[in-house]
Length: 178
Image (cartoon, rainbow, N blue to C red; front, side, top):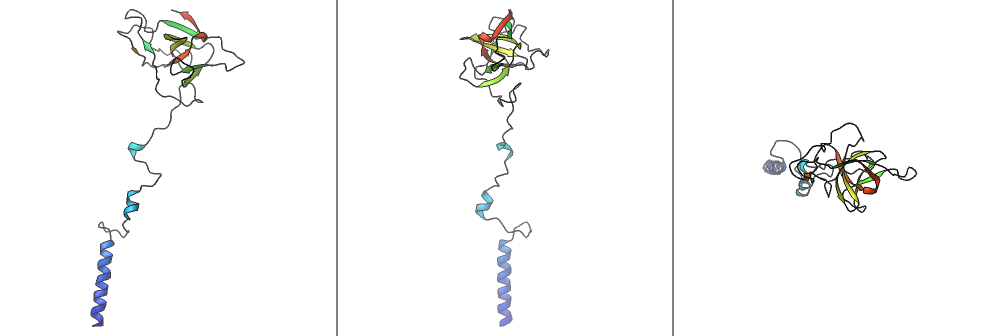
């Protein structure tokens, strides 16, 4: 009779162990329901990954390259004129002051600064609004890149070319052509 009880107890223990063992044959204990639903904090699903912030062209100290709320329109002078009517140069900056011209998201000093350009920087003037110029410019100043503003476009559109764009105070740009 003692051996029968031992067999029954051994069978009960074996059965209990089988119910908790994973079906894949490993010896690991199954995770509790709470543990199974929580992912470690350092694991991020690919769809949840955020790209690292990029920096604004020409101004690594600003760390901003977001969308421009008031994009620069080109081709507003018609299909027979250059897509940007004028060309200018940054002038009149205070060398003992900031000595840069803020390029902004829209024609206002209350909006985010996108970039900073210096004295003598060449710019394509494509728009004008309330004392501000909408400009397109080579980030390097005059590296020879074609900003694609010297030719006509079929109809007015937002600038999407290879150069940077933004709004600057009109009083610091001297028109040199157009």
